[in-house]
Image (cartoon, rainbow, N blue to C red; front, top):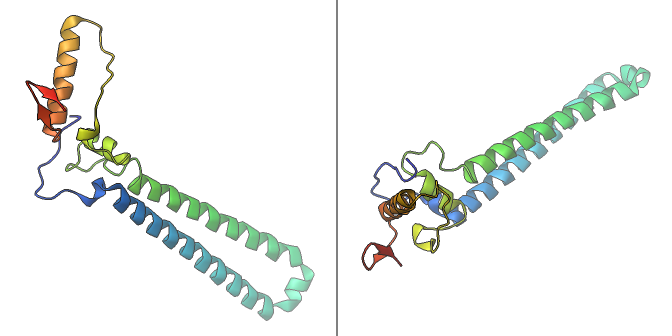
Length: 157
C-alpha cells in the first residue's frame, strides 16, 4: 500500500514543490484579500448604521465598538481556518486521498525529493535474519516500483 498508485500518463504537478509553494502563496494572498475586503465591508456598514442612528450611538457608544471588535475577531478566526486548510491542501497532506500519488512518493515529494534521492534506509523490524532480508527486499521493490534507478545485481545507485 505504501507504493501503490494509479497509473497515469502524466506526472502530477502536485509532486513539484515549487508548484505547490506557488499555489499556497496565491491561496494565502487570496485569504488575506478576503479578510481585508470583509473587514472594510463590515466597518463601512457599521459606519452607515452609526450615521443613521446617531442618537442611539450617543446613548451606548461602547456597545457598537465591542460588537465590531467581536466581528473582526470572527473574521480573523475564519481567515486562520482558511489558511490552515490551505496548508493542508498544498503542504504535507497534498497527496492524501489521491490515488495517483502513493503515500511513499507523496511523503518524499513533501520535501522535494524523488526515490532516487534515497541513499540510505534505516529500518527497525523484528531483528530476525529473515525479517532483515524481507524488509530490505520490500523497500527495494517499492522504490523500484516508484522509479528508483537500479545498478548491479539487485542494488540501487
